[in-house]
Image (tube, rainbow, N blue to C red; front, side, top):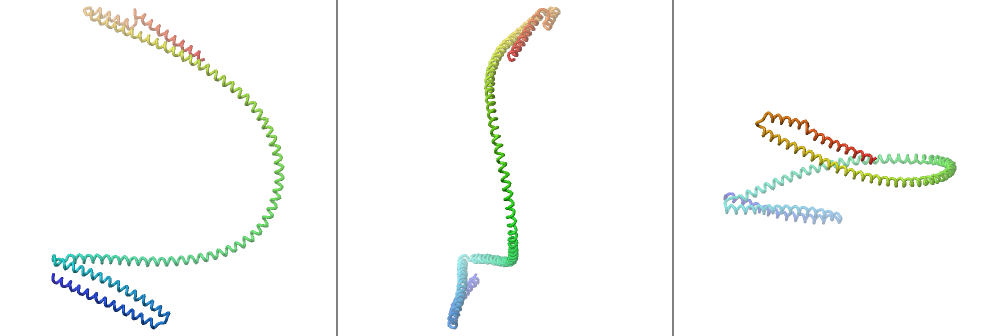
Length: 352
């Protein structure tokens, strides 16, 4: 560690010595430049002296500006190196390590690699700019050639235009003469046609007057016919209204008779319902009686069975006393059907 400290101190001393040498060299360059500029002013003439003085002063200013910039960079690097050394010495005295120096070296390496990348990109950009400049030169040459071709084409077209103008002037003179002759002929034809049209107009006027007279006569006759048609229309409208009123009254009467017939039909249906109910109840009573007789005639099974079978046969086949009931029912149904037919026939007559 003591060896490293000695090396760091020596490098610091070397940097201080280099800085002092650069400062002295800068002062010497400034003196030589000023002396040279004064000598050149004395030797040359008025106009040449001024030009050379300006040129030398510009070169001196440029050189001094470059040296100042370089010195500023060297001073910044020297200051950075001294700061790094002081921090490293401090850390070495405190902890016995030099991590700060390693970190500073790594940072400088990263900066250098970044600067190297920038230089590579700069070179690539310069190459691309050169290629683009070359392409621009090629395009300029092509455009110049194209412009020359166009100029020659324009001159050719101007000559052609001049020839066409002379040709058109000759043709226009000939056309003017021919057109004047044609105009004279057409004017003559138009006058003749105009006289013919005037005569035709007179004939058409007389014809239109005749048509107007005929039209007025037809119009008067049509008006009279229209009046008669309107009178007939009023008569038929009144007749239609009267007929519709009469038919409405007939329809109302038919509706009333239909309602009355529906009421009678409803009453007959109710009577039929009551008859069916009485028959059903009668049959139920007879069945009950038959069951009672069956129960009472257990001892006389054969006789009672024979009687029951006979009574059942009479009921099923409507024999004996049951025949009158069936006939009475059939008569009522026949009367109802005849009554319904008569009502329908009367309604049809009324509608007719």
